[in-house]
Length: 410
Ligand SMILES: Cc1cc2nc3c(=O)[nH]c(=O)nc-3n(C[C@H](O)[C@H](O)[C@H](O)COP(=O)(O)O)c2cc1C
Image (cartoon, rainbow, N blue to C red; front, side, top):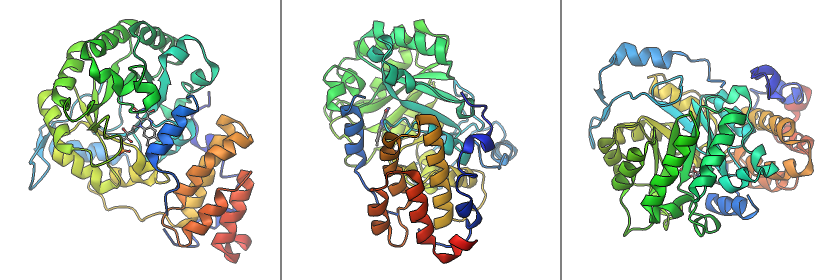
């Protein structure tokens, strides 16, 4: 466990002074490497805040709106946003949450996103069976540092007893702010055993699991799910009501069915309908790519917070920008190339410290490097080179070369 001190946890500022010095030197903007759904399949197949210094959003929120609900959208669905008490602490009543993402939302990236303005983070999903059997690599996935709080640990599985045992162990050993149950994972290997969204075919089982987990922990238990198993069984409101009745304290909807995987669009109307129907806070999820999307989702659905997944790949600034727009401030300037490289290397420094200075860490970090360069001039060449690095020092050299002679002498 670290001390939560952002400066000492950063791991990057001393290691990469040249980049720090040239932070403001060059402008620019990136390209995806792997399809996100392939990434999810991959990670499961192999077995598996510093809030920007803008404390004013809450103040402005209450100054302007007091405790009243207020209209958010001028046209379209004119929803009213009722600030709702989340079952875990959040610096702002409208929470910006980093989505749980296997192979991505690990401690280093969670810390980067907290520093950039994410209010809450959630771990990757962890198998309850593996936790119960004390599998080391799975237990490592539940570790976090103090600076990541508030954090939820997400677990999955179709056996209510194993889920309860895992929840008890997580509560006792790791003490996160909440436990989240994954009823949304679409990956074959998981759903075949009724894990993840597989449970959606048997809502009695879903209820049993939620009740068993609640009985095993004093922490709030939340759920994250999809709109249904397939189009025929698409019933987000019915599913949500069952989960609320079973005792879930907050409900996150990724508004796609399991059979959709990541295709098509998330149906934000469904999120709006669930918000209308539930008494517990509803977190909207699906297809938020920009800070404007955060504002749009809140206006469209009246949700209590949003969960951001793929949009944050290589772009943790999304949280900073959304904080600004929600507080009525102007959007901060987009990060230039040197700022992107600086944060990429700070992220890499955290990965080396938290996950070990090993070839494996470097290999797994390559995807992040690719994402950080998305949209930059010559991103394709840059990415190809970054995908071949064997050490983070090599990435630093590539970045310095890209920034040009000024960067080397600055
Ligand atoms: C690589 C990857 C891994 C994921 N892993 C998890 C996971 O462990 N638990 C979970 O509930 N959802 C997981 N998801 C789904 C996301 O949390 C989120 O619901 C989905 O990506 C939709 O949100 P987005 O459009 O903002 O990305 C994963 C998604 C991706 C792309």
